[in-house]
Image 1 (cartoon, rainbow, N blue to C red):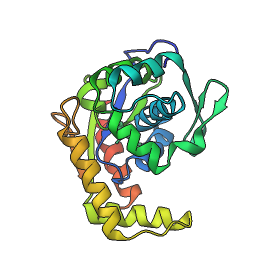
Image 2 (image 1 turned 90 degrees about the vertical axis):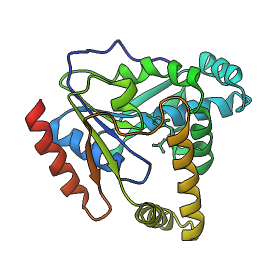
Image 3 (image 1 turned 135 degrees about the vertical axis):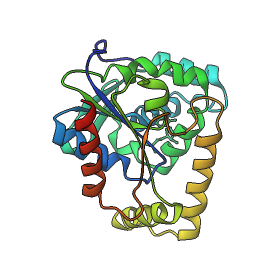
Amino acid sequence: MTSTPSNNPAAPVITIDGPSGAGKGTVAQSLADQLGFHLLDSGAVYRAAAIIALKASADISSETSVLAALDTFQATFHPQGTDGVRVKIGDEDVTGELRTQQTAEIASQIAVMQAVRAALLDEQRSFRQSPGLVADGRDMGTVVFPDAQLKVFLTASVQERAERRAKQLKQKGIETTMRTLVAEIESRDQRDSTREHAPLVAAEGALYIDSSSLSIDQVVDQIVTAAKLVT
Ligand code: DC
């Protein structure tokens, strides 16, 4: 699943790791816009891999089967300015499938597989291009870009993240209970942070930000201030 040219290790990188719902995506996008940097939404890379596995009817419980699917199909990523990224598999635009619950669930399941993580490394590193990169994910500062100039760990309480998710779903006309959302978030957090390979943990020296009672702008300002000291 490769597509882009080799990376430029000299380009500065700011990593933003943390659980889903902490506001990483919006913060990373806004930060990349302010700095004029490229953006890597690494969750989209895992989600694209999940869609590939589904399309290839891979056995999701088998690392070999998922890897064979990734070898067969290619995903390409097309940044859309402030609209995030469009993803194609071959000629097929699968952007609409990226954010579904099913895709998220399978992405989380295949993300525990070390060989799958290794297969997605080059793809992620290829986003490191001048003038710089903001990389959003779970292991950006710990594994993918351990030499990043600035590492941020962004989190928020489970309750706050569930409320944000409920709001997003409501906008899409999907009703759900807070109880269900809290349970889903807790179970995904548990799997992401206790998995054997590249678990979700703050990188050493990371700037720790709890966004529970902060606006997106306040979080971005904190990171821009810290970035000025290191880039
Ligand atoms: O951030 P997200 O919800 O789009 O991520 C989807 C899944 O991909 C998530 O369950 C964990 C996995 N993931 C990962 O393991 N490492 C990353 N750097 C990004 C995402």
